[in-house]
Length: 94
Image (cartoon, rainbow, N blue to C red; front, side, top):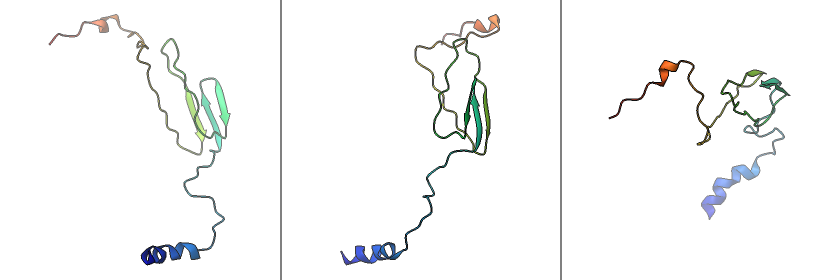
């Protein structure tokens, strides 16, 4: 027990810090546009819906932060058909 008290003594004697925690993110400054919706000073997660026709969703990041886009596909969602009919050739059997 004396060893723990010795280890924790510097923490107990340190002055309180009024600054926010370093790992607490603040909202971004600027505009984030996803499809037809624009968010001002975005913070958090936003929906990115898959279009029925398989076309891409426009995303414009005009903020002071990087963004991460995470997508997933439903197991029952069929992929968009290829634009080239010749691409439908059967795969070789093993």
